[in-house]
Length: 118
Image (tube, rainbow, N blue to C red; front, side):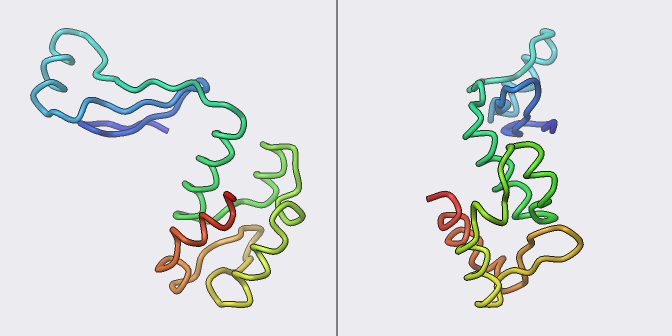
């Protein structure tokens, strides 16, 4: 994904970074032909999985087959207890091959994410 503008985050080629937060510095760097990046991190497999989970859960939901293929593990088996708890509590559903938050789940997204990332 690509982030444009001050403080925007991007990911490409196994690296993640953010743009400088200052509008003035951002514009000066671009005018000087310099990418306004900072905090460049090489992503480990565990970090990639965490980022994928956080980003997809809070948007369209975790693609179960996509997750399985990307991380070479079974999402449903790996997170069986967390998935069942969320569904039982009405904070998530599985629809169209995606584990996604309900309206109630979005209100609890931080605590749900923590349960999955323990």
